[in-house]
Image (cartoon, rainbow, N blue to C red; front, side, top):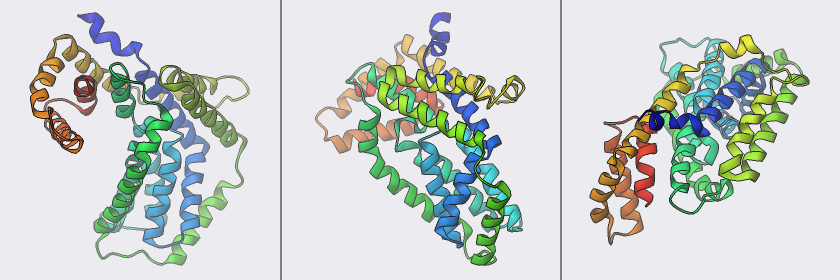
Length: 314
């Protein structure tokens, strides 16, 4: 039924994604994301390892501020392309590829460590909360931060494999490049401060008000960016955002909702129940993981998350 197909628009996820795109655009235009990244690279040093760790540190900071993984990918792509150009790296070199991939890892690897790290986290937990006890933002952080940091460390190591035996010009050249870019930006602007205030407000409300009201409060923080006194974005800038991604996300959710209406998740859950019955917790997790791996060949990750999270938990 049409009602089921359009139900995802009544959930918080599309609107949190819109808020994430808005803040991602603001972070890019004000330069706050670039400043955070450059500062993290500066304090780590001038070697390739320092750049990768600095980017990952910036990714860990931004994952707490921007709950939209695609927005963070765009931010880090712009920053790392600037790095490669400033260091005069060949676009086809392994070093250039490694720096760009390090930016991609920085945008995506920390996403699993916090509830607001990615759209799939929010969607899956929303489905789980409907069948089991509510998972809080703090509770999710306690359980996932340690393994999330391990995953980030593995990503740092992987970036070194990508670069192979190629080396950067020199530590001094990297440090000089970062210092020049920070000098070009000057002192922190009022627009950057306003952006940071709104982000901190939105994330704080998300943490304090829980999974039901928190996402809407974060969306409200993005709306405040249009208000006089902040004026961080206007109508013409809003029109330039990639809203096609929002329709893609919501369409994936619609697949899951339609599958649920047809009873497909219950059937799959019934088929898996005998396999999980009597097994240890570790084995249940492993079987669920491989079931999800297979489902990715049939559905997009968001559709698989929306259709299978509830049955697996139940």
